[in-house]
Image (cartoon, rainbow, N blue to C red; front, side, top):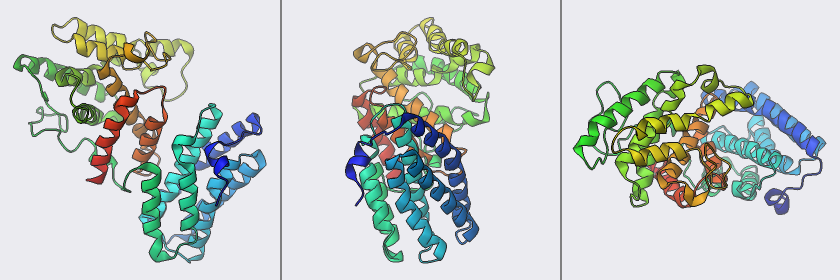
Length: 382
């Protein structure tokens, strides 16, 4: 069994070397994920297996050179699995592929945490490596059961290979869609019929925002469903109509900013970052000027605030942030991670998103994390 202490509390021998390893890992990981996607379509392609093996072998070697022990402990059993796959001793299965991708994900998250000076305990690296070592010696018949057990023990979720498509497709209630706008809940749980026209208007603005990039397609429906379901699981302490309005309006303020600021995929200058941080106030300002939507305006204004006061625009802390904004912050971050990894060749990005959301103890309200996890778990296991 691997060194538990090195997996739960990794020692950093050289910060500069750790940074060099992080750069190397960032070069290798996307290629591994692309090759794993190809392998899922061509499971007998030995050339692809050899390419993945070579990349893992390089990661393991770099870990040894840079004295990043935790990376070597994770990479070694993956390499052993790939050795057996390359020799034909075991056959590729989708669950085997999911485990390898999960392990690479957790390796990336661990290194990101170490570089940032954060803990890695939440990543459950010890059960990950223990499961990988078990799989590296398992017979073919035992490989998938071991993989399934590993995924469940590390993520808390049943393995699933097509999770991305499930989010946003099931309506929260049996209500008609807004004409021409598929997969977006329409005026859910509104306590007053007079709110419906406003909600339709807010929804239309959200749809305009979605048209600004093909990557945004369907995000409003996904975020709305997750937010409303999370609120319901917690007993509906937040007014559902106000929360729905906040979902529609939380990023509408972006449309008043230069597109090079909010559609820029690269690093922003401090000046542009400050411009970007004005968008919650713009969206909230619109709601403030409409009768009956003060609570939604507060949610929009607060949705980028953090529990430790490191957020924006007002650097609020803890209970100063309204509950609806705390829900919105979680589901918005989840969608952002899904979007970030959606182009990397595999639908397992939901596991990465769950891991990142659950890792951000200082960013998200713990009282809302478990209701959110329950919603995701139900979607996955259905």
